[in-house]
Length: 537
Image (cartoon, rainbow, N blue to C red):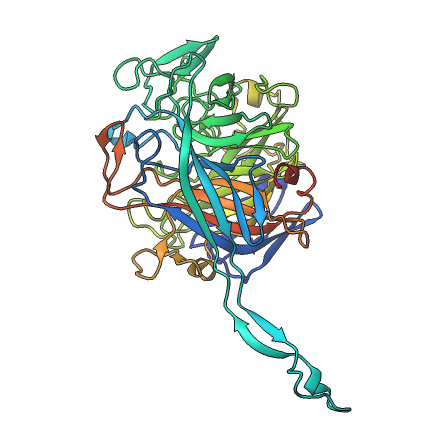
C-alpha cells in the first residue's frame, strides 16, 4: 500500500515495521496550511510554523581571530532562558566543525576546537489581528437597538514581526586530556593514545601531535559541562565547564572505523572497511529531559549496513542509520549502550525530477523528548552553498519513536562488524526499525516568504535556504496559557563560506557569503513541560 505524505514528492511505503521506506522523487514542498499536526504514541504534536528568524554575517570574526563558522550544533545554556513581556533572551552556545577544510583538494587548517558564545534575543511573529473597541458612549443605546452598544472594529493591527538578534560574546577553547588544543586537520593514518584510548592525530605536518576533532553535535549537562560528538572517530567527548576533556565514550566495535586488519582508520578522505562512513559520524546527540539517557545517532548507515544498489554512484543505500542510547545516570562516560536501534532515513532524487532516488537524506541533529521519542533533522545536500545548482528537494524534522524497535544492544550487530542486512542485501526481517512521522517541513514557501526566505535560488526578493541545516535546540515558550508550547531553534552550518575568510592566519575566501542563520518554529509538544522546562525560567 502506498500513501503520499507531507508533499507531492514523498511516497511512504507502508507494510511491516521493518519495511518503512520514504522515496522522495520531486521537491517535498509543504501542501497543507499551518498549523499541521501528527499523532504518535497517543499524543498529538503540532507545528505552528515559523515565528522568528535571524542571521549573522558570514564574514564575522570570532574570539580566536578566525572566521566564525557555525552552526554544526547549538544549545541555549541551561538556566539562561527568560521571558520579559514579548521578548525572550538567553545565552546561546554554538559549535563549529573542523574549519574551512576542503578534503577533495587536500586543504586543511590547524583549526582549534571551540564553542562560540552569543547573547541571544528574540521577539516572535504574530499575525495581523482585529482590534475591537466598544461603541462610542455618545450614542445612547435604546430598547430594541442593541447594535448601538455592540463593539466595533476600530483598526486592523499590523502583524508583529519576528526577529532573532545574535551578539557575539566570546567563546571557549576546547582542550584534550593533556591540556592541548584540538586540531581540525585531517589525521590520515596517524593515531595517538591517551589513557589507553586510540585517537586520531596527524603524524606529521598540519596539526601534528594534536587530537583531530571534527565536532558535529553539542549537549550541555546539568553540572555545567557538555558532550561533543565527533566525526573522525565517532567518539563522544565529555568536557567540564571550562572546556577541558574529562572522559571519552568510545563507540562499540560495530561503529568504530576499522581497516581490513581491524585497526582504527580515522581518515575523512576515504571510507573504512567497516564502521562509520567517512564524514558521517556522530552528527546527532542529545540528552533525555531527565538527564539520564544520552542518545547518539550516526549521520547515515555504517559501511557494513549499506544496501546494495545497481549503480555505484547511487548513495540511496545508506538509509539504515544506527541509534545508540547510553545510561548516564551513574557516570558521564558509560562503556556500552543500553539501547541500540536502527532508523531508516528518507531517500531522494537529488535533481527532484521524478527519477529514482540516488541519495540519502542524512540525519543532521536530534533533540530528545523522552526516553524513546526524539526529533531528528533529515535533509538533502542542495541549497545555497552547494555546488551544481540542484533544486532543494527535502529538509524536514521528523518525530521518531524507538518504542517497538528491535534493541540490538549486546548483540553481534553491536559487538562485531556483522551487518543488519540479510543475504538478499536488505534489512533482516527480524529487525524492526524505529518508526517516525514528519513534523516540521522546512520547505514551506508561504511560511518562509514572511521572513524573506525561499526555496528557489536566483530570486532578488528572497534568500535561498542554505544547504546544511545541522543544528537544533528546544526551549519552552513560557506561555501559561499554552504550557505545552516550545520553540524549536534550527541552525545552518555555513561551512565558513564567506567572501572574506581567514583561517589560522591564512586566507580562505569563497565566491559567495553564506550567512549563519537560525529559524525558530513554535511547536506543541505534549508532556515536555514537567522535567525539561525546569531548566528554563
